[in-house]
Image (tube, rainbow, N blue to C red; front, side, top):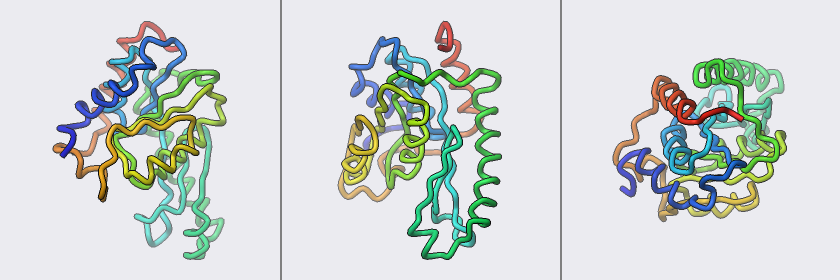
Length: 218
């Protein structure tokens, strides 16, 4: 184990992101749900506003655990053409899965953010935070979606990552920060002593606390 829990991981990650502290252009975006406790600690330590950036996996019909793509906040859809082709998934089937996941994405955005509007991302430095990187599919979808909002810089930041994924992400974003890259990697949860599933309530509570700590949302 490297980290006791997500809170400790967030504090460690924040120490690796000190150059972004107390900067008015910096925003921390969390990938729910597991990324929120990590990102909360980062935002608190850096004195930066916190928001959520949702990504939903598109599970292949009949093989739901296998990602054939993903959707993200901002209406982005990414497909793994190799998976779609090998399983012979039709466009109609993709649309059906995407529509269902879009409903859940919108439900979660409402549940997590409430009535608060999304933060303005144009010309901002965005720290995109999750609790770890394995394949990087969710982070990839999130980064592609973010580009549509014209941020000044996208910095992907995680406490722990598979070494090869961290390396590959250097071309996906403007900068990648991986606090730890153990080898062999296997899975994100192996590097946490406590890796319980983060609940919707925990996400809401942390988002409310973060909003109360910031004088205004830009």
